[in-house]
Length: 243
Ligand SMILES: [Zn+2]
Image (tube, rainbow, N blue to C red; front, side, top):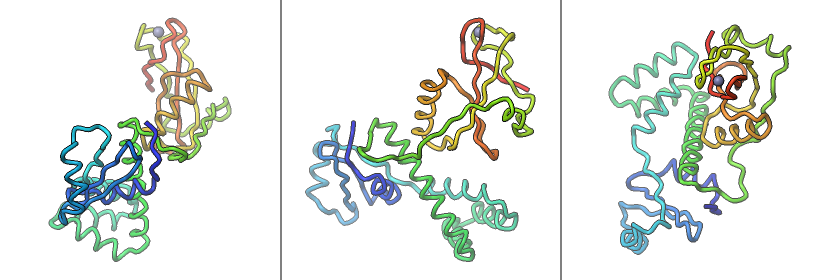
C-alpha cells in the first residue's frame, strides 16, 4: 500500500515510540497518530482504537524497549577503533547502570557524542525501512535510500581485488555438483546492504542489468563487492564459493 507520510517524521516516531508514547498509522487517512498513554489523552483516540483494534487500517509502531537501545549501544561501541575508549565502553556496558554511564562517556567526548547521535539515527532509520518493507508500505514521492550503482569489474580491477579475496572463487554447483567451467563475475556497489530496501533494490538491478538471480556479498573492506557465478551444465546460480 502507498501512504503519504513523511519519512523523517516516521523515523522520529520510531525513535520516540515506547509503551507510553504510542504511535500508530491510520492507513485510510495516511496519518501518523500519537497519544501519550500516561496522560490518557486524547481519550477519544484511544477508545476509538481499542474498540476497533481488529480493524486492519490501524498499524501500531512497535514500542522501543531498553534492550533495543542497548543493542545499538553495543554495536556502536564495537565499531570504536580507539582502544582506550573501546575499553571504557566495554566496562560500562558490562557494569551497572549502563545507560547512564554510557551517556557519561559521551559527555566527556563531544565528537563521539555527535557520532553516536548520527549512528543511532541511521540505525533507527534502517529499522524503519525494514518495518515498512515488512508491512508492504511504500511512502509516496520520497526516496528512502540513495541511488544504487553497480558496476561489473573488468579483468584489471579483478587483479586488484583486496588480498583476502585473492584465490576465492566458485568451487561447485550446489544443484548438480559440477565443478567445471564455473566462472566468477565481480561487481562493485556503492552502498552497504544496511536495510531490506537496499537488498531488494540490489536484487532488482542484478536481475535487470546483469541477468543474475543470486549473488554473494562482501562487506567491511574498503569497497563493497558483489559476486556471482553460473553453472554451465545446469544453469544454476547457487554456487558454493571457496578458497
Ligand atoms: Zn549445475
